[in-house]
Length: 432
Image (cartoon, rainbow, N blue to C red; front, side, top):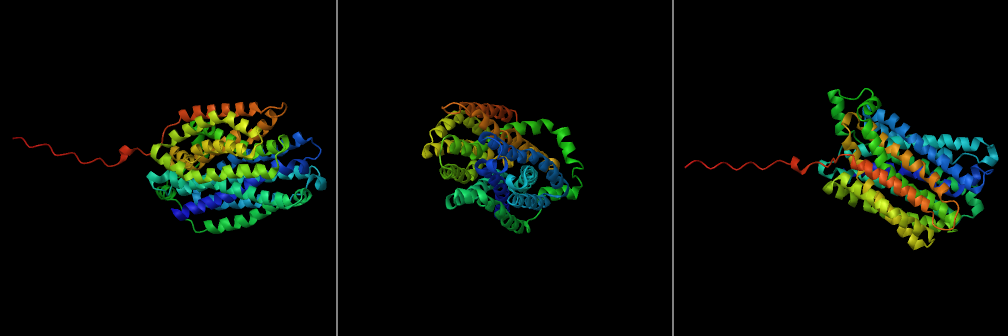
């Protein structure tokens, strides 16, 4: 289990490095380089629009790779998704700017970002099922939480590289070539991840399906015919996690640097510190999920998110690094209370024959609802006025309450303690 968990964590970290480095570049530099004829606000919105395309393609990736995972095994998904995302990310670093090739530059960004999302849509399902279907029942949430640490590691790598480049290069050097370096580095990381995954075994659940001839012929058809309500509920339930995370990791960077005048290095350090603690807390929160239930932790995380959004916005608006960090940390702790257990929760909600498709589609649809739109909506809501952007806080609170309602309609999947063997009954006394 340790080797499997490490392989899933490393691979997921590499995929999310690719995905997050684009988000950070969109917040810091892509607007003026690829949309120079726009106003600063319109350029930022356009850059976030290309960022959102990656979320739109993620459900399509979950359909494509989910079919592969349910028909041919979880293992092939891990290779194909990592290869696709890595190649697309390296290519982003090679795209000329608008000044060189005109409108073709942002169009190429759109295509490559679409391919990034397509690969990431398949990665999550494959990596999660690799650990969840190998894990012992009573520790499934713990072992399945390791792929959920991957996004934190990927975010720290992406932003750490960006932080080093912005600190070590002049603004002109960073805008000229420095921002491309993290995209080029993705090729080396992808090659390392493919090597690590080359010796992984197929999961017992899929081998059992293959041996019994019970694999789904058309997984997507079965999911939407028999589990459409479950897909919609899980997408709505997880939307708040995406909304909170990308508010902190993407929109807040732009708001802090452009509206509050905080140096980008300070903003990156504040966000990265909160993300590092979030990643460290993940397995401990998952252990609570193994003890008290997956749904219980998800409800608690949603409620905490709804309560914390207004304080988070108020702390961000102070522009004081320590206070901003505390605002981000509270948001991400509420987020990981939910997302530490979803890697076990979602697969347990679906039967094995359609598990790769069903769990991945629900998870990535949530990304469209919560992740794709949030930076754009938050940027629009934060314009005008000198006070804190309360509209952003209200928007996030509403999303949290909607997700809370969706989780309330989902069942608990924690293996029942009553499933343990009962003690043998005591023999009845013999009659006198």
